[in-house]
Each structure stands twice: as C-alpha cells, then as structure tokens.
Length: 192
Image (cartoon, rainbow, N blue to C red):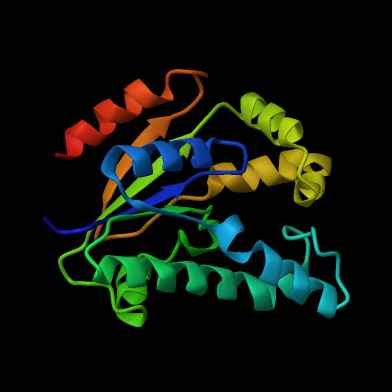
C-alpha cells in the first residue's frame, strides 16, 4: 500500500493539532508538527537577528528569512519518512503557500517524495469567535499580535484559499467540541 501524506491546514486555534494527532493515531502515521520541529532553531535565529523570538506574524525577518526554512525542513522530514514507506501527517498552517497551485509538485521534486504517495489536504475550519477563544486560552506569546489585531488576522485567514492541485481535499468543520474523532473517522472512511 502506498504511503499517504496528510496536510492538516487551518488558522491558529482551529484545532489542527487535535485533528492531526487523531489522523496519525488512526492511520499509524508519523506526526510532524512544525512548532515541534522548528521552534528552538526559529527562536534562536530571531534572537540572533535582534528581533522578538516570539513574534512571527509581524516580524519582517521571520517572514523573509526564517519561515521558508521551517517549512522546507518539515517537508524534507516528510520525504525521509515517505521514502521508508511510512504515511505522514503534517501539522502546520501553510497559508503563505496556498496561492501556489504547483506547491505540492514542487515540494515532491525538491524533497524526493515517492511518486506513488497519495496526498490528502484536510482543511480544518471553525467559527471565528471560537477560534479567538481558543487562541486566547492557549496563552502562547507568539499569539500576542494575532489577538491585538484580531480583525486583520481573521480577515486574512478567511481570505486564504488553498489552490494546490494533485491532492484530495477534505473540508473538516471542527467547531463542535468533543465530536472530532467520530466525524474524522467518517471523513477518512470516505477517502478509502
């Protein structure tokens, strides 16, 4: 059976991590969270550049230099696992790359993904008020800008349309607390 590569995408606070870990458990896949993969080196790079190590959204150095390094590292790790025949779940926003229709083909080529890999993009959606509550409740310093500029952040998040070709796309509404596992099983079963 060919390995699957799951991209779990959505705005901060949408529940990407919950959905990602559920998928990884259900299909026995490697779980790669961008924050776990990159936070230590990202914070070190931001401090070395003389910027706030917690600021991402409004940090020009992060946007220009560091962000692409984070994602390229994540995609390379995915390739390492896919070449071993392991399915992979990627937990990261990927918003910057949504407009690039050929993003998946380019990533597959750059990181030597097997040709037979089946790619699934899970779009996690949730009500805007619930997202803001979740972002506030998690208490991350890196969310300070988002919360202080919520209308701008949320408008940008809502306007982002993923245009990637070469994948199965699933829309997953994660607004209801406590029901994600059952609904996710139904969505994954529909792919089989």
